[in-house]
Image (cartoon, rainbow, N blue to C red; front, side):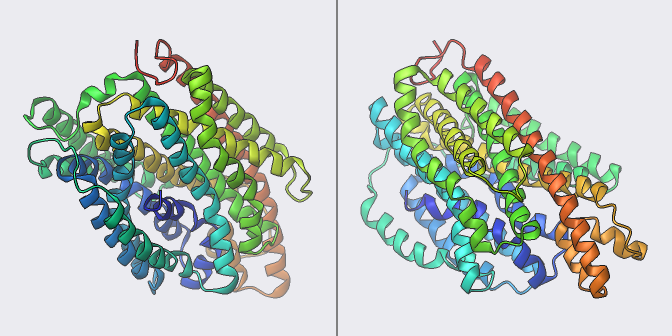
Length: 489
C-alpha cells in the first residue's frame, strides 16, 4: 500500500496545479495536455512488459528498482525549467510507476490464497487507489497554497525515502517465479504499438497533425500490435498469456477500468479548472471541494469486498456503475455558482460508486488467475487504469477545447490571432487577457467563464452516458460467472 500510494497520487495531484503551471511556464494547451497524460499513456505501454518481468525475476526486486527511479524522477520533475523538460521528466516517472503498480497486485495475489482474505486485501488496495486519486487534488492544493507548483512532485521524494527501506525490510526474498527468459523484443513491439496508436488517437482528436500522418501512425501502431499478438501465439515463452482474455471477468474488468477511470480523470480535471478559473477558488479550496469524493472512495474498497461476497460480483459491479452515471448526470445540470448540499452528496455518491465498481473488477481479475500469473494479470488491470486515465484526459481535454471555443462568443475586438488563442482553453484565455487593456481583459475573462460553465455541463453529461453504457456491457460480460469471484462457470 505504501509503495502504491505515491504512484496513484501522481495521477491526479497535478490537476489543481494546471492553472499555476500554465502561467509559470507559459505552456500552451497542447503542452499542458502532454504534461498531464504522458505519464499514464506511457505507463499503459510499459505495464504488461514490467508485470511479466516481475513474474520472472521477482516482484520485490522490480518494485525496489521502480521506487528508486520514481524518487529520482520526482526530484527532476519538480525543478523542470520548461514545459518540454517537464514532459521528459514525466517520462521517467512513468517508467518507475510502471515497475511499481503490477508488483503491488502480484504481491497481494501471492500473499493471500484464501478468497475472502484476498477480497479484503484487494478492497484495501482499492481504497488506496480510489482515495489516493481523490486526495491528490487536496494535497496538491495544500502544497500550492504555500509553495511553487513543483512541490506537488517534490513531495514524493521523502515518501520514497520511507517506502523503499520499508519494502527492503518487509517483503519476502523468496518468491514463486515463472521460468524462461524475458522476451525484450516482444516488449518493444508492445510499447511501440501502444504508443503509436495512442499518439494517433491523441493527435487525430486534437487536429494537430494532417490526416495522412495520423493514419500512417495508426497503421504502424496496429501493425506492431498485430505482430506482437502473433508472437504471443507462436512463441515458446510468450510475454503475455493471451488465454487470460478468455476469462469474461478479466475482459469486463479491463473495460471497466478503461471507461470508469477515463471518465473520472476527465471529470476531476474539468472540476479542478471550473473551481479555479470560473469560481475563483484557490488550489486548496478546490482540493477541499473534492473531499467528498475522497472520503467516500476510502470506504468503497472494503465495502466492495463484503458486498461481492454477499450478493455476487455481477450486481455489485453493474449497480455501482449505474449509481455513478446518475450522480454524473445530476451534477451536469446543477449550478456550481450556487453550491448547496446536493453537490457534495453527489460527489460522495460518485466516489463511492466508482470505488466499489473498480474494486469489484479487481477481485474478479485477480481471482481468475494462478498466483504465478499475478503480475501479468495485475499489469493488465493497471494498463486499463492508465490507458483510461490517459485517454480520458486527452479526449476530455480536446472535447473541452472544441466546446469551449464554440461557446466563447464574446466580441471584444481582438485580432484574429489572439481570438483564436483565447478560444483554445480557459488557460489561454487568461494568457491573452494579460496582453489587453483592463476593460478588454475583464470582458474576455467574463466571456470565458460563461463558456467554461456551459462546457463542463456537456462533459459531465457525456461521462454519465459512457458509464451508463459500461453498466449494460458489464451486465452481459459477467453473465454465468461465479457469484463471488467472477470465475466463469
